[in-house]
Every structure is written in structure tokens, then in C-alpha cells.
Image (tube, rainbow, N blue to C red; front, side, top):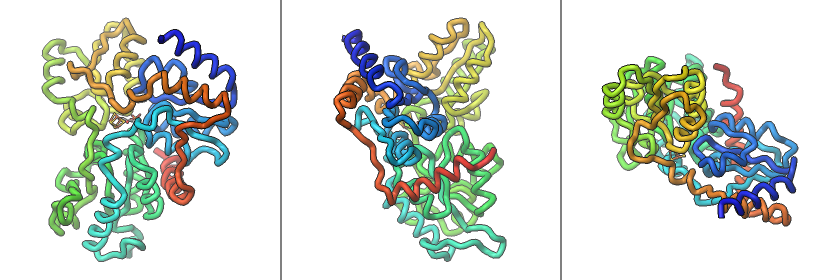
Length: 362
Ligand code: 13P
Ligand code: SF4
């Protein structure tokens, strides 16, 4: 029963004490979030993994790429555990290493440069550099580390793109086309300068001319939760209440972000709600567990999800309290299950790209 699980988790946590830190993403269900020592967006959680060097074990209640990042950034003697190994991210799976490598080779060939050794031109700028969204495998972060690139999250994408444009004429951005497009558009990049890269087509489905004119080459990935949000939902919410404020995650399609009053990472959404006034009505375009939690936290505001059909992130939802109880009790017995351990060679290159992100100043 829920009570029994609760008692087991609380007891195991108490036994493990300072040895353990539990990190929880905003999209986790309440029954899991309540045990987290730190709850945040993916950027904050990456920093939280860095900030607890004394904890022997980090239990990451989130998805696979987040746990990998925690393993890369944490101390070498720390262990990272993902309570359910099936908690992946369908968007991260849309960019695999070999497709990105092939794309990189084709792109570099178009610009007449060696893909393994891209060097700056007479202006001191690279023809292209790769930027990966945090929602990607460690192998792709390592790819960015090896090719002068960087990682971004939804909370620092503009800062990271600025960093990239100081060093390169163009960017290959993967896996999320929407975050790339929304961020570059807000920075003044024209839509014609953001061609999509479809790995199933030669030159990604572009002409050489388009590739030469490009500023941001967008991988064709997307989030299946955030692409459910539509302009129609926003129009209907505004028709029902002209005073309503709309905030959406930047993984939503461009038209949706444009129709909203604001867009931002899960932490930015949380702050937007906290800064609203009692009586305000706010429609949110993001995952339902987070929206429901905010609605419960701020009962004096009318907070609702723009999508009338429940839209949980099915993989985040795979972290059930039962798995949490199991990994914690095993730890109490001295057994480590579901460890996420990134190959040291991959990890060292991925860390270069993550460190660039952590050092990039807004
Ligand atoms: P945040 O970086 O805003 O936490 O988003 C992570 C994510 O997976 C959103 O779908
Ligand atoms: Fe991945 Fe979308 Fe789930 Fe975020 S909400 S973890 S991008 S599938």
C-alpha cells in the first residue's frame, strides 16, 4: 500500500542519512517529489549533482539523460542511481550518435572542411559548431566536447547560442527543433536561416545553397508531450477569459510560443506562477504533474493545463515510489542497483561540453 511504501522509503532514507541525496525533476509525480532533497529543472539538477560531493550516492528521480549528466559531473567516487532504467526520453532517442556523425561529415564536406579537424577561418570563426540540448545521450554531449561544441538546457539556450555565435558562423542544434527554432528566432535569426536536418535524406533534405546560408541547422527531434500544445488551445483559453496569462515550455512549437505571453524552462514556469497575484488565471503548456502541483500549491490562482487531455511524460512517470523503495532498501543492504555509469572516455569529452555550458555567462 501507499502507506507501507511511504514508511519503507522514509526508513531507508533515514538509515542512509547524509550518504544519500535524492534529486527530483519538476515532472516527477508528487508521490516521488516529496522524498527529493532537491527539486528543480534539468539545469538546476545538474548543478545540484555537483554541489553534494559528500553524498556517496545520488538517486536521480528523473530520466536517463539527467542521471548520465549527474554521473559525468559528480565526483568519481559517487554513484548515480536511476530507480527505473526504463525511464528514458523519446526526444533524446531521436538523435543517435551515428546519424549525428554522418550529418556532421556531410555538413563539413559542404563547407570544404575536415570533419575531424574543423579550424577557424580568417575571421577567427569556425564554419560550424554543434550544440546539444541536455536532453541527449552522453555520447552526443561527448561529440560536442570533441568538436568545439557545448550543451544547453531550456533555461540557458539563448546564452549558449550567443556563446556559439561568438565562435562560429553556424550551429548544428540537436535533438529538439523547437527549442532551437524558438531560441534562435527570439535572437533575431530569420526562419529561412534555420533549415531542418532530416538524417534520412541526402544533405538532410537541403540544397548546398541552403546549407551555406544557414545560421542554425535544426535536427528534426521533438517532445511528444509538448508538441500536443496548439494555438487553438490558447485561443480558446483567451476567449473564455480575456485576462488569462499563458506560459509555455520552449519545447512547444513556434506558433504556440509566439501565441503565449511567456515561455521558459520548468523553473521559469514555476517562478512565473509564484510571481502572479491571487485571483490570476494562468494557462500552462507543460507536463501535467507539474501543472497539477502548481495548482495545488497556489489555490488562490486559477492554474490549468492548456491541453484538456491529460499529458504526462510517460517516461518520467516510470519512476514509481515502489522502485524508489527498492533501490533505497538495497543500498541499506550494501547493494547498488540500476547504477548509471558513463564510460570514462565518453564522460571526459561530455564533461568538456557541460563545463562550457556551466561557464557560459548570460
Ligand atoms: P527543463 O530543462 O525545463 O527542466 O526541461 C526538461 C525537459 O525534459 C522538458 O521536457
Ligand atoms: Fe523527454 Fe518530453 Fe519527457 Fe521532457 S517531457 S523528458 S523532453 S519526453
